[in-house]
Length: 386
Ligand SMILES: Cc1cc2nc3c(=O)[nH]c(=O)nc-3n(C[C@H](O)[C@H](O)[C@H](O)COP(=O)(O)OP(=O)(O)OC[C@H]3O[C@@H](n4cnc5c(N)ncnc54)[C@H](O)[C@@H]3O)c2cc1C
Picture 1 (cartoon, rainbow, N blue to C red):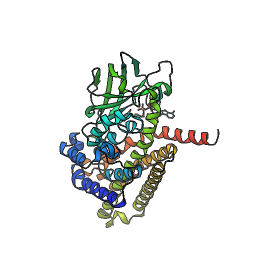
Picture 2: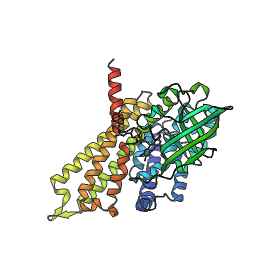
Picture 3: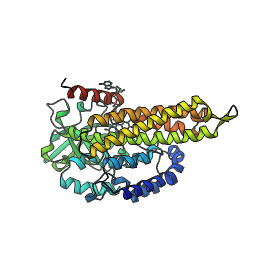
Picture 4: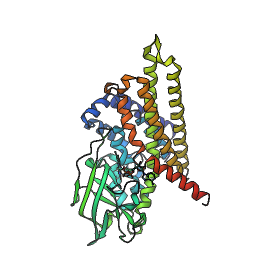
């Protein structure tokens, strides 16, 4: 539901102050300790951040896509690891349930996800099925009033903290592609689930991923997301979830770019060489201007696609365009920021190299840049009747 402008402004102002006063001062500590303090998670709960996109009837804020993107741009102004804590509950970990869950499934899980009492994770990727997710091998075989799940999921965000997994598994062993896949809601405490050791990553310390291994894990029939009519339709749920998720990641990339630009500009104004601020040098100005123009372009794209989605348009192609452009754009902005900071940009204490590593992920998860290019071109060719 769309908020009135005053309510949205108040929410954005609250998030902006939370980011500036509480999160920014903790960036270095979180990176060093690879851990977000419990009191910060508690404050995120109080602010309703875990349930931004969960409908109000289930205790969430019920933000539409445009409103969500505005909030995420604010959250992007600090280390993306903070956003990751609430990312799955708002995006890939809850939206399958919001869009395709049965009333009973929504009533059971969504209020707890909205409050942050439980964390939801999205388990699609496997050791041999990344970009080609439709080839996944994890199986779910009918057994005794339910299904028995076997397989390994890889790089699952928030898995070490999760209480609920949306697991994609093959229910039709005779179909090799995406058509024989179903989605299941699996309690993390179920017998037969073990977690791998959290992966050591290039960036975003404080956000955790690991393998999730299903070894004869039995779940009841009620765990099939959307009920029996959704059998073998789980991949459609995954793709719908990713449409919104890609806009979310694009908005995050915009926020990070704006933060990096702000830091770059301030540094360029303060740092003097050859007797004047480096901001006076046209070669520095060119980098600032390119970053400003590109960040603005991405902001406009994301908000346009979000508005179209809110008005009921299908935005699959546009969401891919946003993800491709915004994630590549923030990579260039981060690279220029390192350059503008010079040696300081390479040093840990200034935090720029940390952002440079953190934003690298945006070009990889929720579909790599190459996969976005493929999707965009494929849809163009289809729409042209080719
Ligand atoms: C930190 C992190 C968190 C993640 N969180 C989650 C999560 O919560 N849930 C989840 O399910 N997954 C998650 N993932 C997995 C992520 O979505 C995949 O890593 C991603 O989709 C790419 O798959 P892959 O790593 O297997 O790479 P691959 O698919 O092996 O790709 C390797 C390279 O080949 C390219 N490529 C592949 N196919 C083509 C093609 N047809 N044409 C051109 N180029 C191609 C890719 O673009 C890439 O450059 C996460 C990954 C990371 C790193």
